[in-house]
Length: 304
Ligand code: PMV
Image (cartoon, rainbow, N blue to C red):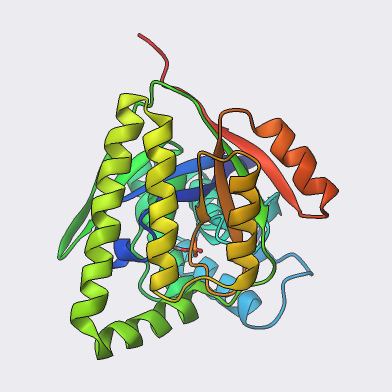
């Protein structure tokens, strides 16, 4: 018997990094993602794509072993097919974790509820990221727009958001970037040295995220766009941008983005997002510049 699953990638619209320190974040699923397929085998096994080498390969194999053991060691061989670029801030590791968690639970005959999938994916994400806030795999496992807040010693506070308007995003790539773990650790060192200053910036990001979440629920995309612009400025103040990232943010704003910012860990490159009323023209113009990009929509909540 064969088991199949799909898990989307994600974008953080507001609040990355500050979310690690307990502030709110806004995240939503992409239309692209990762497919997993599990077929009967003698023991749990992952077919790692040949393109994945070195530390990433080892981390994926270790994460899989950990998840397979936690799922009761179902006798399956799992293969993956990803539409997401690796280590670009689009939740590729979270999508891999969630897609694998779903097929492992199915194969083990256990209900693949959102809670069970989230828990198993968290095990894998710890292998990839060390101490992730949980926003990535929570958003990916739920597959919906969420407000997320990490809490000490308790499970995070997660709320699904009903946006009355569709959110049209352009995702563009600003080149390679360091692994999330390294960017998060370097920021932790800076905030350890200059605690009060960094705490103020995290609090500001939290406040902007709270305002942006309210704007989404009110259908005020202009206010969400402004919150994204301010959030980008705060991420720059935290030392998380680069000339490539900032350049692309300004190009997106020049093409009429209501808001534009880096998404995910940032650092040197990675993905940048722009919120648009009409994304198609921006995608065409970016491609003409030779910038890899795509459009993705976070659909409006259905009226009941
Ligand atoms: O790995 P990325 O680029 O999707 O970034 C994750 C978001 C961070 O806030 C930077 C880290 C975290 O654990 O939340």
